[in-house]
Length: 120
Image (cartoon, rainbow, N blue to C red; front, side):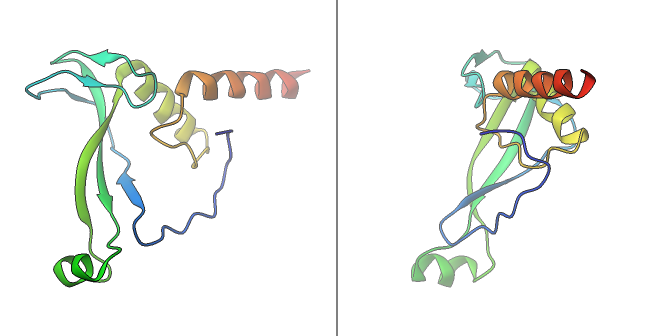
């Protein structure tokens, strides 16, 4: 995905969404996790960004259990410290459509190219 300052995303039934974390925390799970961005293994105790994920109810049974505007919990997504730093910095710069599954290294390269063009 390319960098964008705005997005017109309206999640539909069945879509998986996530909440953007405020800050880093340490990974305290029973097993190492993979970074959703760079796919590197994250060691226990390392700093990470943890994204709480949820699904919007899609089927009648899900709606009856969670309601029309309910949230069905999903496994969290993780970004390693390096990718998490890039993610938070890009959001701070105003790029609101950065997704947890995007390759943060590639998005950083895109940003650097954009900055180079602006400075020339």
